[in-house]
Length: 169
Image 1 (cartoon, rainbow, N blue to C red):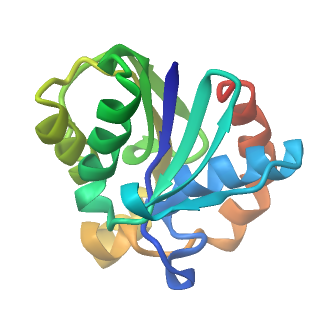
Image 2: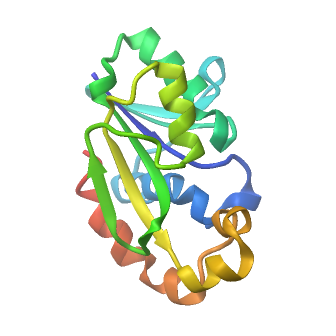
């Protein structure tokens, strides 16, 4: 069994923000495959189980994603090595990806939450680049991660998301 976790914040006000890039990636993948999300109130998530893969979008806020991940892990007895976390990373250029099998949070509060909840950093993560140094310097890190994509970035999103879909099966 595998668990694929998209990072983001619940609520329409966060749609197309940098912090919700993980949600956006899975939503795009679902749309391409005609999948639909199902609510799971016990684990505070929306999810879809397809064969031996469970896709989730935790409905906690970003900094508490680990609570939901731990609930799914414990119920299905999923090894940490089979939990893929998909998160944004403002240190990577927009549209680039970086995959690691384990490691530190790199300052990402969602990854900090998962590491704390699981008690390990040995789980794969896929970081989605949202970097825009000029804008980040202008508005600061907190406002940057909660900001919407620029028009130029939005134009490139379909191509970026198409490349991502091959990594989500």
